[in-house]
Image (tube, rainbow, N blue to C red):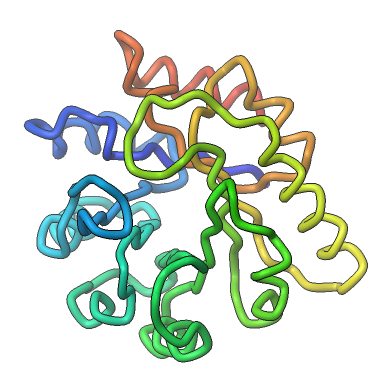
Length: 216
């Protein structure tokens, strides 16, 4: 079943609790970007704020580590059981070790892949993870346009999932809105991280409800 995770990077940073209170009943959970200013040219949520957000909602937390060394961040996070934790295939560190550490914390391991990275690089790990996150924009900033070519990665992953018998979810993040979400779902995406497509509207709640109705 398709699930929408509002990306809090695009929300009103001065009133996050109110945003969460308004959206809780309409979404699967929340997507939180942690950026270190090195892996991408931006700094967003740190571990303290991420942990606070995780305690302020009963919905699933999906953390994306846009950081150079994801292994260094895992002990800083205190997330509920079954939270999704995405780290980038392009980041530093031993990938199997990172996956194992995420599992030991009872979180769901997810590998993210940038638009310019060959999807073949993650196939080795597909039997070890719960989700693949396909970036449909160059990561770092909210509000970018969707890159249609990234759907070819989704198609490859869907084909592999069907032939291998694996059950990993496929997530997508970047430039998703009401004009393309149906098409993206039809390609086989399960989890949607949406920022400007929700928070770029005058009424984020109605925007979220509309998006959900389109893929329900």
